[in-house]
Image (cartoon, rainbow, N blue to C red; front, side):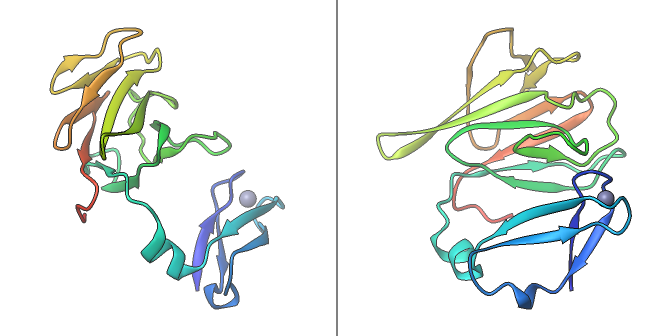
Amino acid sequence: MKKIRCPKCDDFVLFDEKTIDRENIVVFHCDHCGKTFKVKFKRKEQTDENEPDFGSVVVVENIFGQRQVFPLHLGDNSFGRRNPGDDIDCPIVSTDPSMDRLHCIINVTEKDGGLVYKIRDCNSNTGTFVMNSEVTKKEQRIIFPGNVISLGATTLILQASGEKD
Ligand SMILES: [Zn+2]
């Protein structure tokens, strides 16, 4: 059995992954709050072998949350403290009060066969820092694999594509 979070109340709903054998939209019902929600699943082979790799962001474990890894996709990847009902790409499960619910965006583009990463702050309360240097308002800073990003008391590290966590 696997579990999936209810987007409304954050409770876990259990399901049997063996019943999902192809690209499929499955309807779940949360016994806790009564919410009905749909989740789209991809075939496992597709996600394992054919999913393009655009790098990832590792969230370092601290007193507010556990270590997490978010694969990036082309275009904008929004980051912030996870809040049920919010719709952001990389919701960080954390109680860090100094990290906004939408804190920063990492944009990924392809250029000359490589990848370019740019970060910008989303008007956050505590700012977005790359290697201890603050990203100013309206700035789009180019960042590189290995760079350390600070959102409040939470630390993120950009990982290149092909790097396994
Ligand atoms: Zn629920």
